[in-house]
Length: 324
Image (cartoon, rainbow, N blue to C red; front, side, top):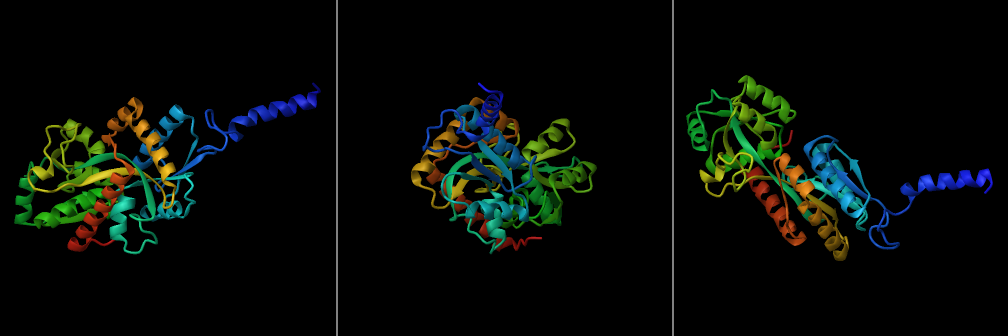
């Protein structure tokens, strides 16, 4: 073979992995090109990490190529709007959350989309708990004690910011009990935790994943978790609902595709996602982050999202929460 032809063949063989369908893809079958997964927040955050764990497992198990696209901005609205406008052909997945597909829709009346109806639900990826934590000097040791303190006067609490699931977890408690809780929003959970550790604020609502190390060291004390059942990482800590009947606030993450995606594609993708979520790798990695993998049908997940949106609309209306 002439040298020029050999060089052309070598270049073609090196390019093949980038240009040809992944191993096991039948020509004309789904998927026959990379899938775009839109994450509406910056790389490195919890949403991004959870999404990448799932995408890596799908690639390992199925050979599907999933290209991560972080489109941050507007509290998640930039990425959400982009995903909704994508073609409903199964090649755009959106890794949403209780914030992007629930709270933000309730908090921002006209975000330019309807998160409850402009998506086809694919699968609930996971749920996580938030937790009420206090500085050791705070007189209360549980939710009953917190409510008693709030009757004596206002109790300030910090969160990662307005409209976060941690903020709305406290506002739900405020709506259900009338507790005199005063929100102090921070630009992220890290600064809020630093002030709690220093005793500058008495109380915080945080994700269990970031609070557990400080609880274990004794630098802060847990009052209650926000989920319906106790958290596996802190089984001795009660739920808010054990004191306030009917209370539940769950942080969640899930996969969506644009509305109009064919039902047969939704079913196929759902099966692949659920298989990945049941895998030992994803289950172990998610639990390391304090997350419980989800196992809901697309229909059940859709009903869950609609219920979440309605709940947070009631909370926003009752408490008067406004975006910054």
